[in-house]
Structure formats: structure tokens, C-alpha cells
Image 1 (spheres, rainbow, N blue to C red):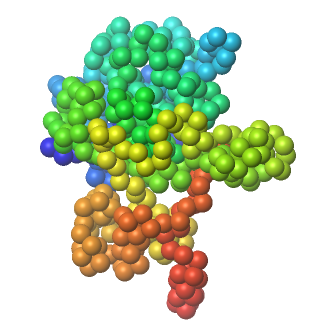
Image 2: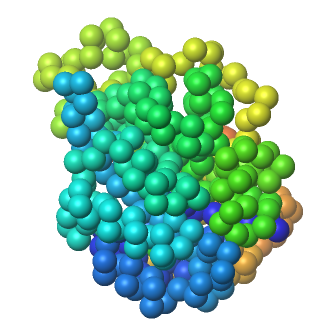
Length: 412
């Protein structure tokens, strides 16, 4: 069967996370979005694990169910450690096929730090040792580097990572077969690095609130069970791993280089000319994802490997509605319109991916329909994100926005 999966979220027990990130709201929003398989996130936290055990039904195939939504047991570990006189900060995702295995992982990791401190615990544990612990417990687990290019906390991070997967995971490297690209990169950027050809590239929301579930996701056509999904990712089976759904990477908050305190955004070329220093304060800038890809790339932009899984760049529907209406995404009118239109079409992904142009023009207000169609064609303008600031997407030009504003004023 064809289904959409989001393999990376956080529960209400993680820092800076909505109180609504509980099983009920996650399942509710998965249905609204059109997602069939959700990560649980945070299985290392004892209170969240207890909620999962009390609410999820074991399907017997490595996945769990709640009100029609499937869940895969997942957690994210922040490893901060020194190696060869350098400090590394690496985030990894762990997937478990059973509560029994999960309990064993938690028991082992509890010897390495305080798992109760946060839904995403910080452990002074070498990433290679983390993988070794997990795979020794159950070889059917998956360990996947999270948001692989994020500057401060990732395997390739400019401020805290490695240049090669092998340097990070050492003898455990053959057991690592997928990478999460993160919001600030898309597959095309990763295709420039030939060493990554063997890895499946997955994309996930890393959501801290229910409405952001599915802002990046994965489309499969296979049996909905743990072992099959693991096999598809391990073999990079293009017939069953159909595509990923991506942010425009420029919208990610670490795409370009920069210095947030000085409101300085720099392209890799500009950073090079400035020798990595902020032109305002003279301090080193945060080197972003695009720059880091350029450093490690051995292929030109536009290269596509023969075994590449395709992808689609999308903008979340509530952002399209907000811009079409000329109001903030947080406006009450946006949520009202969003829910009404999604209910009319079925799910958010029905609108963004599946509905024909004719159906969109017939079923959506004209300006919102035009917004969806422009996003599908990539006709957007983006001021790239940098140093923790999300990029700003414009679907309609300034002249069109001014006209929209005049129309709105005429209503009062």
C-alpha cells in the first residue's frame, strides 16, 4: 500500500515543545495531514514511554496503532563528547521494533546519563558507542543520523561534526544505511556528495507542535510493517521508497551562513570573501548547510545519481493560506480556512500533492488555488534562513501583495 511517514517528532516532554504533543493530538493531526505512520519520539523518557505503553496497540509487526494511525517507536539522542582533542555534538535517531527492545535500550543508556532530564537526552556518549549499544541489544534496530547538516548538532555540522560517516561511526558504519537530510537541505544538495549515494535520504518534520507534523515526510509503497520499512531503507528500493516531501531548503533556519545578532545573512561566496567574519561585529559567523555541502561536495550542482529517490518541494498549506489572505499564519482566520478546506478535500496532502489543477481551482478560493499551483511549480521567492532564523517564502510578489491589501481594506 502507498503511505506517508514522518519518522521524527518530539513529545511534550522535550524542551520547547507544545503541551499538545501527546498521543491523541499527534494522531489527530496525522489524520488531518494525511500521514499513515508517525514516529513516537522520545521513547527514552520514562513518563512518555508509560503513555505510549498505555495508549498504543501492538499490531504484532513492529508497529503500533492508535485510532487508525500507525506509530514506530523512536527516540533522538544528543551525544556531546570529545574525540582526538575535539568536541563533537551529534544527534542520532533510534528506532526500535518492540517495547521489550526499547526497555533494554533505556536500561543501557541510563548508565550513560540522566534520561529523565529531557525527551531528547544529552549523553556524553560517542556516537559509535551509542550505535554499538543499540545494535548489540537488537540488530533489527535502526540508527539514523538526525538533520545531518545542521551546524551545531549533526554528523556533518560545520561547528561540531565530521567530514565522513566512517569517522563518526567507525566499525558500526556498515549498519548505518539512512540519513535524515534536515529542513535546511534537500536531496539534490546531498547528491553532490558521492559518499552518500549508498544511503537512503529520509526527510521528517522534527516537529515540536502538532500542526507542524508532516512539514517534511516520506512516501512509500510497501507493506506497512517495521521489517519491510527497514528493508526498503536498507536496500534503497526505489520501487517501494517513492519520494520525499521537502521544505524548500532555503526556508530552513541554517541554509545560509550568518550572524543572527547582527541580522547578517551571507551566501557561501560572501562568507569566503569576508574570511568567515561578520561584517558588523567581526566575530565568526555560523557556517550554514549550503556552505558545508560545498566544502564536502565532489560533484557539481544539478548532479543526480542513478539510484536517487526523487523528491517534491512543498510549502505547508497553512502558510499558503496565510499569504493568500495577506495575514499572519497565526491568525484565527487562517486556521478556520485551513480546517474547512482540508475537510473538503480530505487531507492536507490531498491538496498539496494529489488534487488536479481543475479540482484545486474548483474547490479552493482562487488566490489560494493559485498559491498551491505556484508552489508545485517552484515559483516562489525565498530569503534564505541563517543562524537559527527561518527563511521567508514569498509566493506572491510585492505588487500582488499590495493589491491584495487594498482589496482587504476595501472590505471595511
